Length: 286
Image 1: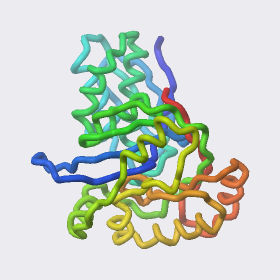
Image 2 (image 1 turned 90 degrees about the horizontal axis):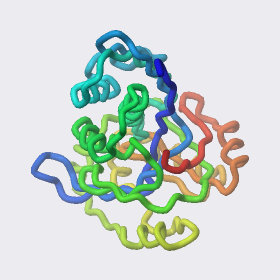
Image 3 (image 1 turned 30 degrees about the vertical axis):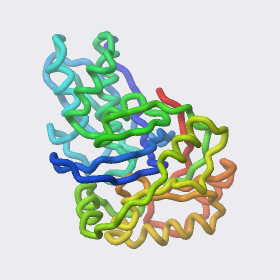
Image 4 (image 1 turned 180 degrees about the horizontal axis):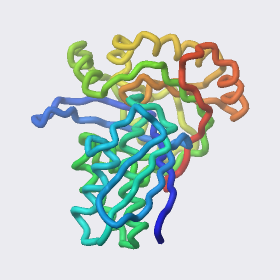
């Protein structure tokens, strides 16, 4: 095999609770993470030596500050293989948007390199390598519906959701995750979450009960930095969404609709012309 193409799906957070600040400077978290059909596309091609990276986006760094590049470096450091790789990223996921686009790319590159060089993917080893690059990258290795704790790297697979029809809206503002967490600390809000009820709902009940604590503790902080988030959420509710929530540290907001055609119609009629907007759906693990 000389080359392959694979998807790097985005993720949304169905719930995100921020807990105590750890000694390493990160917060303890409880999250429900979910893969969606919005995805970057990645092509990997064998080369004689080294790592090269190119992209459809001119906003991405193409050196070893890029997570996809770092994932390739980690792969070659951990495995005795000859040759190198050329990586091409077709960017479809908005950057710095709370959708884990960079993390998804890194995980897909790692997953793809094991296939390209025909090595057995030892999941625990690979997740350990990815955890050194970023907290949510191990999740992006195989996605699905997952309960994540720690910094986001301790993962428990949950039963797959029935397909949910979504609209994802990203205002034309970039929010850096550390900035949002710093604002969260500045606001000194106390989290009130019944996570056990959420887990019980997802593990044992047929339908998602959106009236439970499916919420995001980072939302007030993100809204204070990007007031457009509130306007987006109000418009989504007016369009007939049954549930809306900020994803990750934002500014992306997603909405759940009973039918795919409702999400598609809301996208077609969306009034804010500078937003990124796409209809999508939840997907199982991959």
